[in-house]
Length: 108
Image 1 (spheres, rainbow, N blue to C red):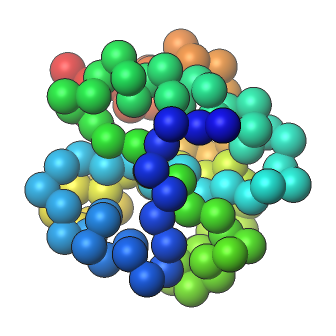
Image 2 (image 1 turned 60 degrees about the vertical axis):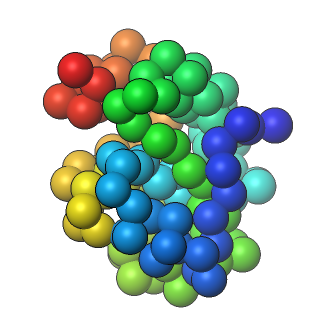
């Protein structure tokens, strides 16, 4: 099980949009194999870079409002938020070095 905090349609504004932190939202679903594969990689990145980026998870099946709002059509999809705005989108499961490269600007 992931150590990332779960967010919902109801908590998204407070947990993500109103946060002063850089937050990556992992849009996922229970039935999604690639989502399960990328979860421990995201946990590792979150733990190694906890001072720079926070990672939270949003189950798209249980929270269709935010999935629709952010046009999630393929999962896993990860969106990085700063100041309530999407500043980066990463689609698909990738190995850790590739994800770290995608997130390099936030991990320095």
